Image (cartoon, rainbow, N blue to C red):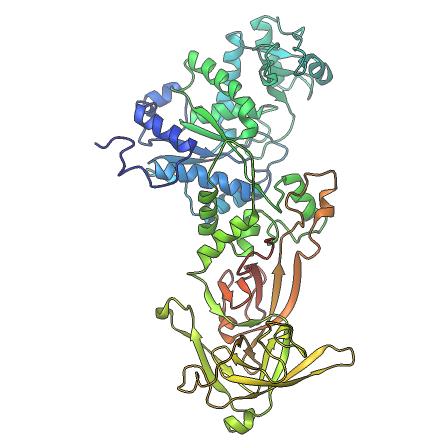
Length: 596
């Protein structure tokens, strides 16, 4: 049998401190003798099972109180990716210990997002989809054990008294007057809490650790509170609920997690995580060796905010159209914008993990997207700011003003097996307004009176002038076709031109709504100054235009991606695009328009 870190088994991925921890544990066999009964459970039930077939176990544990965002995507890729790479299993767990904020809509959205990103919680013939609320019975049992072992007590100080007695970084805390209660009295009061005999806020259960600890989180933290609220999964069975810091390590332990990966804000909670699991292991309640927590830096992406509360404000106040608005950093928003699971996974791999907070430039995400789309996206021509081009001698050269000349281009320039897309050139075409100038600036090689350009995949034309309205706005450009210069014919190279413009035929072009999305915020680090973050919204984050696209796009399906030549990558909107009413979203440009 190969060594746990045999080169044939270890993936060729960039190393980081988490991979080093995992490889060290595999080499030392830290969890190799731990048993698994096939489902979460306490020490007795796990020990009755066989040796755990998973070399490591990780988990992705969102609270179902909102839609996942790009920061969660990093955590998903990290937890599921490490489990995949090291022969392990990643659990999909809902941390649904707060009955007032959680909804089934969010549960469904989270599961859909994880699946869309390309990951599964099924392994070894088992679904590893779990809910923290299903462990409430064990959590209550663990709390009673802590009381019986002298490690917890019921505190009936007011919230204000508890805050005052907690101390601060320069002053130790003061023991609660209820800290010296007997075990029997604490058990009775805790059961009174459980049985609904006490009002919300009238008492809490606290761990008994050290009120003088330099780590304030260890100053007798609260582990249970009274909350007379119906839970979406357990109904009104409970009126006391565990605190997250108490529930989370227990969930990990019951699920046989080996490496519990958290963001840096939980670093100060690690001592309590270990203290609690050490106490429960001493009592024989949980499987050993118990899980260990490791912290990594959260994703800070420029031009993005990820606060659920503030994202909800953007939705509620109509700054965006919903949680799946393509400007939102939510996974459903990124998906509708046109991001691919492969691009997000590539982004997560490239940024890696570290122990230090830093800002990742948004262009890094866009580069990953371009790298993924470039070999995949079909090409197409589109005119986003159209003006009509009239070829005045078309009838004379082509044998009639209504004559249409078939043209073609590869679906993908590097994949000839994907075939050709076809379209018609005629007397009237749509071109970009920016492709014409009365008096050209230096270096301008497109249309101006007397200049020749090539219609991409078509003929060479010579500009003869343009028509403007009374306000000076461009309304039509005129040109003449140069005979025998069509692309792909013997005369195509007879005339050399410096300009090459895209176009769409009036005869067969398809009218489309195109949404030009840009970054939601105009500053690199929104919501980090004293200014209201709403004042930092980019006023040009969306421009909607009526465009013309080549006929191949008339059959585009929702969510299908394309590269509009010259313009960037676009996607058929997965919600609004339909036959007869095509709608395309700009995913990203061909290059970073925000680069300095």
